[in-house]
Length: 169
Image (cartoon, rainbow, N blue to C red; front, top):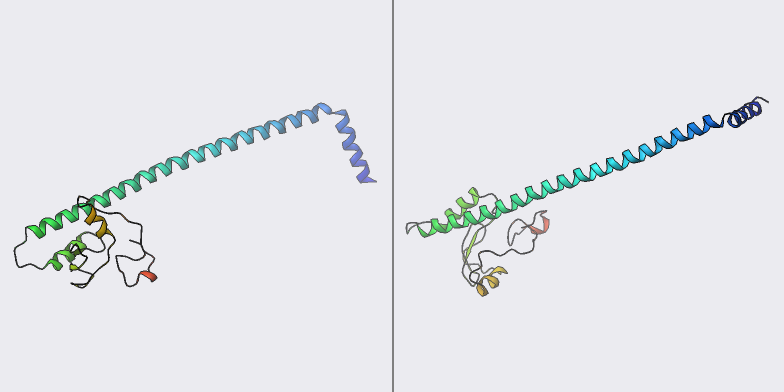
C-alpha cells in the first residue's frame, strides 16, 4: 500500500503545483540550450585550432622540402666546381664519398655517360650499364637541371635490398 500511496502523492503534487513543474522544465530547457551552445562553440574552436596547426605544419613541411632541394642543388654545384678545379691526379670516388658524407639528404651520387655507363660511383661498379629513366628526359631536354620522378622502393637507385626496405627514394 505504501508504493501506491507515494505514486498518488507525487501525482497530487504535480497537479497542485503546476507552476513549480513548469519552472523546473523551463530551467532544464535553459540548461540544455546552454549545453548545446557550449558544445557548438567548443567544436568550432577545436576545428579552428586544428586548421591553424595544419597550416603551420604545411608551412614547415614546405620549408623543409625547399631547403632539401636547395641543399641538394648546392651540393651538386659544389661537386661540379670541385671536379672542374681539381688537379689532374685525383680520385673522383673519394670526392663523391666526401660529398655523400657531408650531405645526409643525398643517398647516392653516380657519374654517368649519356648512354648510362657508370664512370664513377660510391655504390656501383665502374663500367656498369645502368637504365636510369631520367637519361631519356635529360637527353631530350638538355637544359633541364633535375628530374623528379615517382617514389621507388629502396634507399637509392638499384638497391639490392629494396624489397625488404621500408624506405623510398
